[in-house]
Image 1 (cartoon, rainbow, N blue to C red):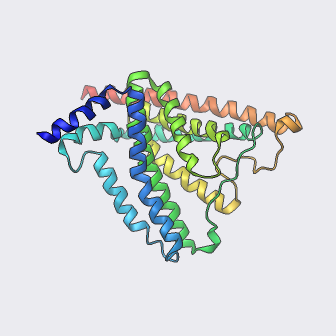
Image 2: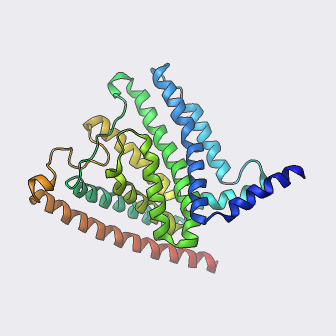
Image 3: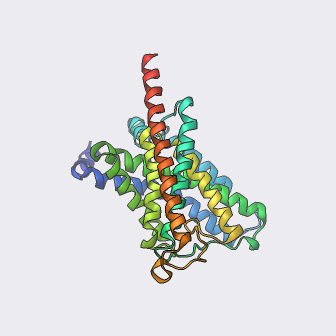
Length: 299
């Protein structure tokens, strides 16, 4: 009884906070809970016993437990339904999955095409990571795959679930995606190379994954694409030295110094065309989702 009375003022204060504030704080806490253990373990693995990816098994177990917990397993049982709803870990109809993945991939292609334009408008930093030649190939591959799984599961749960969902319900998907995109960008400021020049990139990422979550009411498609995209980005960085946001390889001058040349206008046209195709795909996904819900309601 005394504990409940002590918590009551705290819970009352929490309930009086604006939805956006509560959602952002909740999402950041969930993101930290999901990603910090892996960051600590892999950092230790890099310094001690790097010939073997010993940090991967305990992290895999932790991510599995994390996923079960946000889906309602574990104590306290009184919060099981709330955790499940906030995580947005809803199943996706089998006839929607394909369109969701196609729409998401086309959205990522459009994002990269836009990034090729932005790379000619502002100087982008070079991504920093480990030198893979210093470690066994199998170890590096295991780290890459585990990092991708951690990012896909925990970041989508935190940002498209706990953060975006309540803002979306109160203020609509546009505001929710903008807020989560800004928050998603700013948490990456923990990487020393990330600057404000990359905020449009993270907003575009939030638009791709956030729209998927909004249309399907599930984070599962974006989890798959997020993890897959991270694997591709890491392997591309290690093989070519090119950052995931750098579509020019730093080989072209900014238009403010060299003028808008043919390559720049080609990039602009490519960005417009791919964005139009992505919008069409998301519209088709919205239609497929509505049809699946009507069919489910009729059964």
